[in-house]
Every structure is written in C-alpha cells, then in structure tokens.
Length: 539
Image (tube, rainbow, N blue to C red; front, side, top):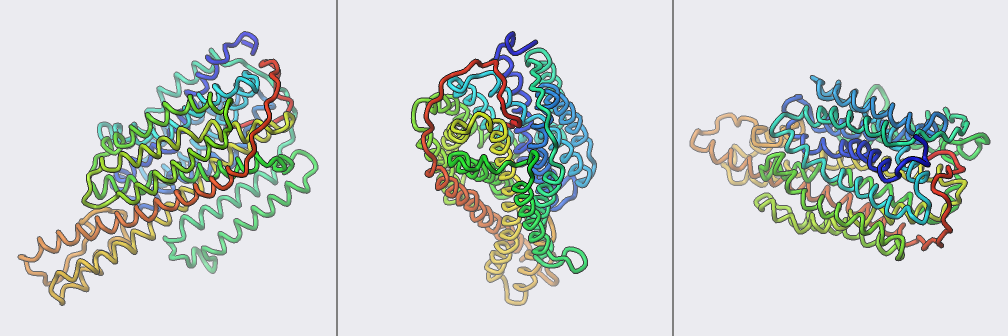
C-alpha cells in the first residue's frame, strides 16, 4: 500500500492505537505504586525509578529513532518498536523483583522511542499543513486521554487482577495495534541517507542519566557520598557538564548533528519546546503525590483512585479535538495560555483542598479545572511550535519538540519523587513530634523517634511503621496507635500538598514561554502525498 492508496484517517487511527498504549504506560504505574511497594518489598525511591527509567529510555534515543525511520521507513521502524514494546511489557509483568522490573521498563521505553517519532512523521506526510489541525487534534486528544486514563485502567487492573496486569494488558492491545499497522499504514520510504551522530547520542544520554540519577537519589544518599568519594552533587555536575559538551558538539559538528541548533532561531519553536518541557514535567509529576494522598491517606482503592481521575480524563478528551480545530482559526497562543494556566490552577487548587480528613470527591472541581487545561494544551502547542518552522527543518524540529516533552517527563518524575520523599520524612517527623505531646512525657521521645525513623527507612505509608514504645501501658496503646495514624496521615497530606505546587510552578514558566509566541502566517496547501524534504520526525 502506498500513500496515494491509503486512507489517511485509517492510517492515523491505527498509529494512534500504538501511540495510546505507549503513553498509557507513562502514567498507568502511578496507581499501582502502593501495591508494588508491598508486593515487591521495595522502597518509594525504587518504585519511582520504575517510572523514571521508562521515561529516560523513551526520551534519549528518540531523535536517533526518527532518523532510523527516515532511512528504513517509518512503518517498519514503528512495527519493530511495537514488537519490542509488547514483549518487554510481558517481561515487566513476569518480573519478581523491583530490579528486574526496572530493567524490563528500560527495554519497554526503548520500544516506545522507536515507535513515537514515526507517528508525527505520518501526520506530516499524509496531511497538508492546512488540514493538519484536525489530525493534530486527534493525535493530541489521544495523548491527553492516555496520560490521564492510565490511573483509571491501572486501578481496575490492580484491584481485580494484580499490578502485573497493568503490563500484561499490553499484549492483546499490541497484537491488535501491530495488525492494524500492517494493514492500514502505507509503507512510505523517505529513503533519506543520514549519518548517525554517535557522540551526540552518548553525550546527551549520559548527561541526562547523571542529572536524573543525582536528583532522584539525592534524598536516599542524604545529598552526600554515593560511592567512594563521589557525591550526589558531583554526579549532577558531571551530568550538566556532559550536556554542555553535547551542545558544544552540536555546534561544531558539520555533518548531521543530532540536535541542529539552527532550528532554535525560530522564536515560536524555541518557546514551544520550552513549553513542551514544562507540560511533560507537570503531566508526569502530578500523579505520584495525588495517588499517595488518595490511597495511603484517604484509604481509596486503586479502582476508586482511577475513577476520581475519570472526569478529568473525559473532559480533556472531549475538549482536545475541538481545540485542535479552533487552533487553525484563532490565535493558538490564547488557547495555549488558557490551557497552561488552567492546569496550573487545577493543581494548586488540589493542593489547597487536600486534607487528611476530607472526602476524596471534594477534589473533583479542582481536577476538572486541570482537565480543561489538558484539553487546551496539546493541539495549539504543537501547531504554534511547528507551523512557522521552515519546511526543510520540519522533520528535525518535530523530533526535537516531542523529545523535549519526554525529557520534561523524566525531570518531572525525578524532581517530584525526590521532593515527595524529602517532604514525607520532614512532615511525618514534625507531625509525630506534635502528636507526642498528648502522651506522658516519658513516652514522647520514643514515640516521635519511632515514627520518624519508620518514615525515613521504609516505604510503608501507614501506622504499621510505628515502632513499639518500651514500657507503654496497655491502656495507652490504643491512644498511641491513633496518634500515630493521625501523624502519618497528616504528614503524608502535607508532603503531597507541597509537592503538587512544584509542577504547578513549572507550568507558570510554560505560560511565560507561550506568551512570547507569535501567531504564524498561514501557508498555502501542498499535496498530502509529497514527502517532507527534511529528515527527522518525532511524536
């Protein structure tokens, strides 16, 4: 099947199924975190790595994978990535330890990196610029729904089948997606011969890994030595140095750099890329503190946690396609700023409304505000960033733009994870010290120290972490247990509330970037079947 015979909407729908599946796995793990902590006997930091390593392996090879699509054909690379992703999902479900799960998630992320760049390549190939708004609306709607639906589907699977099934479910979906891709997607062959920037790949990958490793493990090592004389801050510094070396290499590389810096001369693209980083940061980072609050404090089941997110998911999915169409007719900057502001306001409102003794459904208005924001973001952000890019740079720019969102997700997962861990230790210790005043003086210090120590050394979120108090009379044990429960719940709630403000604040940076964007001038349409003259593409 060639592009002239293909139904572009059928092809895009087939690609979107696989795209939905890989984006689903960026958030589906969140609802299963408490279950994984228990059943894998792992700490919170290790489970956060299950999220981060997937995003890291997803982001780093993406620009390289887009060039593979240019050389060997997007359909073939997409199909190969789908096979890798599906088989790695089975491996994830079969993992008996958190270390094996982290390794399997890394391979899963690699499969996602092979698939993602090809989806937007086909949008550019099958749809002329004047008709890409609706296509981007469908694509962005799928992205928004997948990012928010993960907790709902994950909750149902964890409650009824076990956490392993959040990965096993990818097997039948992957088989269907592969079948549809083989039948509906044209075997387009750009036949671009590219050199592969191996030094660029190594520098960017190593730099980003060092930064994420240092940030995410900082709390675990008390921001001190990691091994030998090497400290956390030295690892982060090495990562930053490697990333600076990567930028310098891209400037002096005269062949085909992985990240052509010329594309950043376009103001809309530069601002859109920064905005994409902030969106990835917020969309990934928002779920962890919410899930901890809902399940560990309010006692909601994984399924109920997912249902609480469902209205936000549905609203974002309903709004996305309409905003996609509107972004072709009105100034997309206005729509984008509304979306970023609404998502930030929704997260701030959740932080304000979250209380240890509140009803979980009291958070619904705030989550709906966030859903409106998500629905307004993706289509205008993509259109504004990409539409004014020179045609010869379109493929490269799209690869960079969408890689930026995944990099934002990696940074969001690491930063939110470490802030949450730090706040849990501090907040529970403070609450325990306050609760201890209700006990006789001789029992206060052992009570507070026992809870604080449990909060630092375990991944358990409950009163079971309370250490026994030597000499405590039996008639006071019930009171101590109640005080311990209140201290843990109040501490976790405070930690979640503070942590949620981080992605909200980062979104405000996205607002400032979006405000610098200009409304692009309309372009005349050209035949949809004409391949893009430039090289790399991404999703």
